[in-house]
Structure formats: structure tokens, C-alpha cells
Image 1 (cartoon, rainbow, N blue to C red):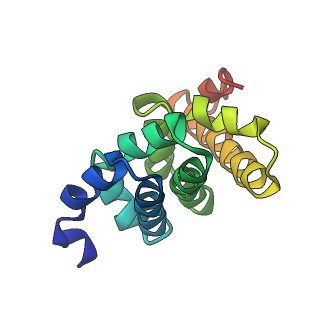
Image 2: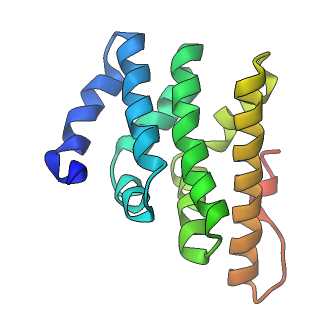
Length: 150
């Protein structure tokens, strides 16, 4: 029901607005969606919200980046909880279509234990998804394409 209320239309202006607190809250709301049922993540991955969140992860203030990291981490956590080719596709979309790995790796340099813990866990999700995709697309021969950014 929440997804049918026009959320994908309402959140972009908040993610792109001038107020950092509002951008962070919008990322937090999206992170909550990404922590839900697989159908929510599937919906989310089909919207422009993911690109906007990765943009926040790349170029925003630290507090906003922290919230944006939650979105990426929750999508990758969903894959780790249910490692199938279809859920690995979400991770692949984050990596290839939305470019989430570079800003994720950049967060490994921060001096905040909570952010480092989440970024490391999310990085593990990226690598696990790469292994799953490699196995499913190459008949079991594993050459992980997601190791390059690391």
C-alpha cells in the first residue's frame, strides 16, 4: 500500500533538495523500504530512487552518506539472506547500473566504527553477489567480476 501512494514521485525532490537533514531523512525512509520484503526491493530497484541515493552516497555530507549507505546495505543484505540469481541481480544493478561500489569503497576510509562495519558488510554482499552471478552465468566457474573495484 505504501508503494502505491506515489512515493517514487514524492521522494526525488527531497533527495535533491538543499536541506541536508531532509536528504538524510529521505534516504532513511528508502533504507526502511529496502529492509522490507523482497517485493519492496524489487519495486525500489525499478525506480529512479536508487540512482538518487547512490548520488547522495557519492557527493553529500557525511550524515546523508550514512543514511544512503543504509539503502545500499539493505539491498545487499536482502541478497545475502536469499542468495539466488534473481536477488543477485539487485546487487549487480547497484554495481553496474548505479555505480554504488566506488562510493562504498570510499567509505572504508572514514573514522566511524558504525559506518565502517556497515560498509564492510555491504562490501561482502557485493563480493558474494559477484560470486553467485559468476557461478550462474558461467556454469559454475567462478571469476568474480565485482572484485575489480576492490
